[in-house]
Amino acid sequence: MKDELILGGHSFSSRFILGSGKYSLELIKAAVENAGAQIITLALRRANEGGAANILDYIPEGVTLLPNTSGARNADEAVRIARLARECGCGDFVKIEIMRDSKYLLPDNQETIRATEILAKEGFVVMPYMYPDLNVARDLVNAGAACVMPLAAPIGSNKGLATREFIQILIDEIDLPIIVDAGIGRPSQACEAMEMGAAAVMANTAIATAGDIPAMAEAFKKAIEAGRTAYLSGLGRVMEKGAAASSPLTGFLQD
Image (cartoon, rainbow, N blue to C red; front, side, top):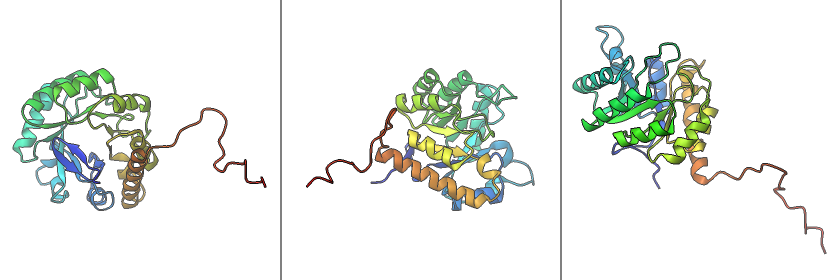
């Protein structure tokens, strides 16, 4: 059976999404060739540098562009960026990022809900980045989001699943793909997120800052696939107390 990630009626076989904030040719090439990424984010300002390096020159055909609204401080700014991205030919996918906090870069959940509602009504496939909160996630579902993207830890921190318990609540209660975004620093952490039941993982800094970018991209691919397989197969029980012998010690000495 095919196990595909469905977003806004579009299907993807890969469950790794590349966040390209620290993009380079080597990073994007590794993400596509070694990690099998089929979705890559881009900030519109990086695609229009007037003669400087253009991220669009690095993204192969067949890869879905996910413009993000990086830099937006409120819903109105995010909506303006999303509309501009579509007019520039980037398609209907959009990742909503709204941040008023410049120190910790935490998303503004309420403005994110408002932007999601506006853009979903305009036919966008809206993928909102949010601080994990069950009530906010429910509001995003009602606003027309295609998925919910809770942060694992502050952007670029590589701290891992700092919000693990809250992400698990969203996985258990929200009937949309939960894509863990921001803060994942190791393949093992990506694997853990997938074992929890996350639909996909987005990563950037962990790969971009690795000593061997292609090798790290491949490691993330394998970790995400392993975590997904483990989740689908049904993880074994956890005993809070005592132990249980894997090979029973009774009966084999009897005549």
